[in-house]
Image (cartoon, rainbow, N blue to C red; front, side):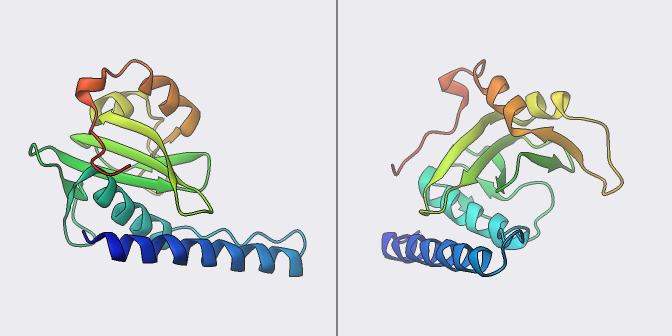
Length: 152
């Protein structure tokens, strides 16, 4: 992934959150948080660049990317307090995108750990798990089992 394209994305994220802030000031009490496909795609691109991942085409079943060591990776990006898992990923990377275009790593480890800790299947077919639970689970994952950042 080209550094120039990532730098442009970071600038666009800052603009996007500036627009969100303006909308929320115009319509007090109404939230305009970007979510869904937009946040997911932004997260996939940021994670691919930061961790040196090869992205699969959009809507690929179960996994979003492949790591240099061959691990299949599901990337979840969020703005809220939980994520939903539709299936058990080989490796799970969860990030929280910040308004300045940076991101916070929430979980980076074997997918079965998160899968076992997730709740029951909901009507949407997903098993929810809170970011706070993922952060606690992350404490027990050895550094050697995590994807390593290639760009900081």
